[in-house]
Length: 303
Image (cartoon, rainbow, N blue to C red; front, top):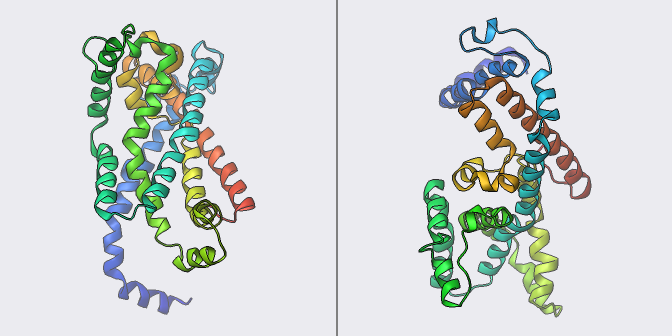
């Protein structure tokens, strides 16, 4: 393309480019500019000296984290919670979308959709508050039911073995309805004639789902799975911080909460930055691996 045509196109679409300026500025200011601070991970950072004047220490903070007491605990808990989330929380919106797709009563369908995606719009503070009250050892609904049935009341939030189940169940409740919207939209793009042809061939509902619906959803499922695997180490730390207690650190302490305690609570900004950078690099590697696997086996990927 010669310069004359390029200038002509720029003049023609100049208003569209003007509309891009706020978004580009936002990315530069809030996403790319903060990357300058990543060098803190390789420095003995001091608030008084600033980033530029703080001395370089190389991989000292990474080594301290890898050799420290919290590395295996935070990594194990992060991987376990993320794996269980993929295993149980990721399929939940798919199942809900498939069920809603078979509902013929539109009033009932819309009511269920509204009730299921409503929690997504509530603050995580409200969600964790509801969960805390529901599991309260004194007047929580679950403990009231257990007491009526003759069982002993339990303080679920201080029992380490229950934390992961509580956390993942809460995430399913909050996100299943909103996640199902994406799959319902994908279902609307499947050609209805495929189902008619399958009925003529004698396929029942299960076979229609297995051979038509799921293959039609596969591209969407794979894209969302790739993005989810990329966040494998990015467990929702806000909810964990609001739910966990020192008694449950054994199963609840994750990489993100360790970064929070190191950086905000203890003021070790260099260590927190090093751990956060490690977290991001691992996520990037996982995205690349899963994207290549997806393109190899399904032909779909995010790039």
